[in-house]
Image 1: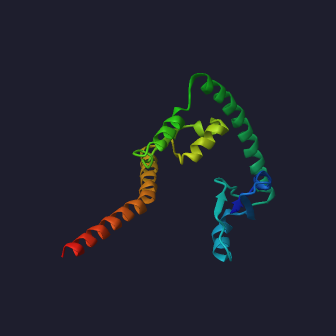
Image 2: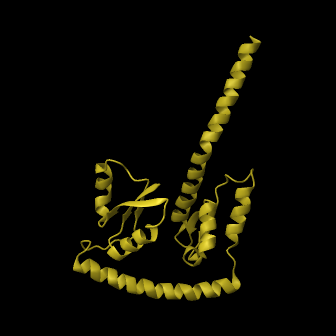
Image 3: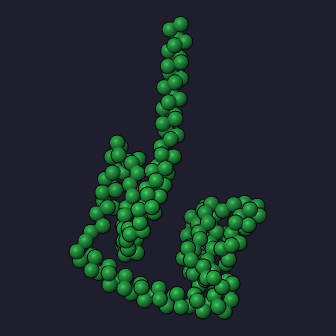
Length: 194
């Protein structure tokens, strides 16, 4: 069972998240937090840490739950709905002329024993927003790493460096085990010879 804390200053978003996972047998929402600034202290004070904390990227500048926050959240939700409609139009255009080949290429890389641990970044501008849910699930299952296009060289360098560092960290224990076994074998051979 995955214990999850959700932090979002919008009640509707928290309710939707909780309701979406209410019948999910593998996930239990153990805490909801309104103010993102409260998260670190809540974690420090927790008798038991959650398995995962889900943070909403954007929070209002006004006090969470205040009339000003509700007004701002309402304005943002209205604009997001408009953007969603535009993304639907974009998806139709993209689907007519393009294919998310990176997912099938990543699948092939992950199935190849020699290549499976190679760091791969999928570079996209709006692709995550319009990717079909089934393909997004495939990408998640294939441990896809993502980089946003057009954010500048410094940001891209950080994405790339972080991706490589995560993969090196994943591969390190295997390499260490091989070196340990090799060292033990060589030590045993040297002892046997002398």
